Image (cartoon, rainbow, N blue to C red; front, side, top):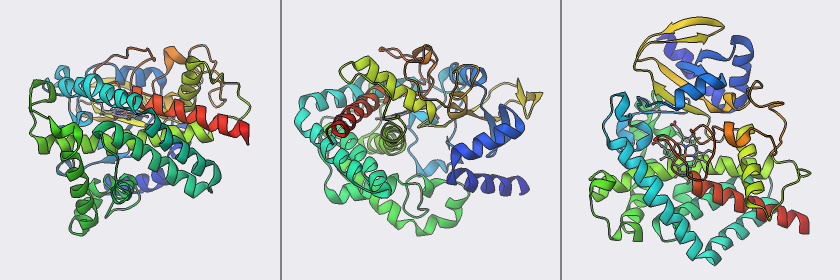
Amino acid sequence: MILGLFYILDLFVYSSNPNKFLQKRQAIFGQNFAALGRIIVGDYNDVKECIQPPQKRSNYLGPASLMPRKFSKYFSLFLSDQGAGGSALHETLHNHLWADIVPSAVALIDSKETEFSQYLEDGVMIIQNGNEKKAMEEIFKITIRYMFHSFFGAPLTEKLLRDVFVLSQTNGLFSSFIAGGIKPFVYFTYCFQFSRSSKVERVIEFILESPLLADYVPGEANGNQNSEDYAAMLLDVVIIAAIGGTANLVLQVINAIPDDSEIDLNDDKDVMMAVLEAARRNSPVNIVNLVISEERNLVVNGKERIIPANSLLGACIGLASLDGSVFAAPDVYNHKRENLLKAVINFNHLGYSPEGAGTRQCPGRNISMKFASDVLKLSRTKKATL
Ligand code: HEM
């Protein structure tokens, strides 16, 4: 009961300013510490050890614990790896996203360049001309338009755009997709979630009728899901992973890269490094949760401890990416830092290589990097002509 109260308190304080909350706790208790109902692992080497091997998972997201029935049972984020007590399903679905879905979305963007560039043109204009609130909202809206159109092959109507926008925000217990599934609030708010469920129904209908689903046949590559389960899985992928992570990434790209940093916009590698460094300084996806299958030793709150099997660890990419023993002057933006490509962990994988690898690496990495790089190029070009 008392622990539950601490968890709720932590959750509220974390939500108002995640980085401040985590950095303050780290300054008091050391690199790894107990908070948010889990052990937060902030030491870079410990985080590396958490994200590389096969993992046991459950319905945890960022600082929250989720009610499983409010989400798809096929969402790879919540499935354990085969090497950690899960089945082969995780790898199948992860590969399906990485090798089939995301490459087709990227191919669609390339084949409809004018339409997709227009999303960016319109969006960047509002972001640069709008006030802070309007700019934030527009970052979400261009991300939603771009991701839905590229994944499902058809543009969203304005009504559906508004639905997805509301679902993707985390501040409404009755209407937010994620907040509406967080324990313990879900027990109290369950009966009043018509706003959430009606929007979910409309978006699922759009997905089921989309060009992507037109030729859908259940098979080995997609985990033999029926169309309804498949659409529900894609809804989780897009709303939880694609929109939140990418909008946060774009926010960093727009707001946190100093105007005077020298980025060669004609050099794709330089642009990529700029985006990666922006992500490193303020991690778009902050906490990766895993349940350890065996007991292990870890320094927590400054003391070496034995952490029992089945404990929940929150590997904190955000804190680890600011570990001064790995990234010199971690708070300073420097996209030329020598170890950036080798040491970056923002996509849940050690290092960044064109091919990518690993069963838990973010399978949406390539499309979100493309989108953020194009936003960076366009916003800098527009600034230069103002
Ligand atoms: C189109 C955009 C994106 C899509 C479709 C996407 C999709 C996903 C999916 C499906 C997973 C679960 C993978 C698994 O465990 O099998 C995942 C994990 C992850 N993604 Fe992404 N993602 C996107 C953007 C981003 C961005 C912009 C970032 C950060 C820079 C990011 C960072 C991560 C991280 C850290 C994880 C691991 C989270 C965890 O295990 O708790 N993703 N992503």
